[in-house]
Image 1 (cartoon, one colour):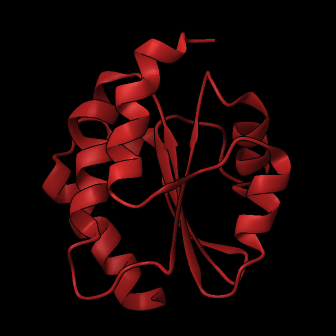
Image 2: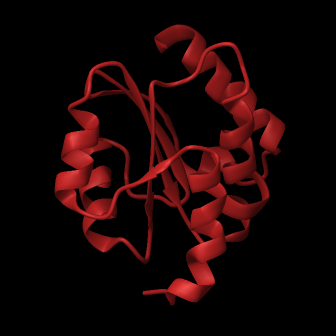
Length: 136
């Protein structure tokens, strides 16, 4: 478990972009029961989260189409909500950071850590833009 003072700026980056933090399994269930599209960012303290995942995800929101709902859980901090979010992302194994797009509660697009590492924020934004074009 990471100390809150360490993760606060990492949380705030997404909150400032309009993401709702999910802290419990119930929060995740309620978020994914909403109609429309919901983006779930599994946030992390790792360098690829800071360098490309968060910036790429935030940049993707400036495009013509974007998800109806923006949510985030923090791996290594929000244990209950992260576990529940990952259950909803099966068959993909747990990874952080990761970014999942749900439509009407069904997983339709997934970026795992290995899709994020070594990619630029622009590449991540472009990948998400393609998913938004198809599902949003």
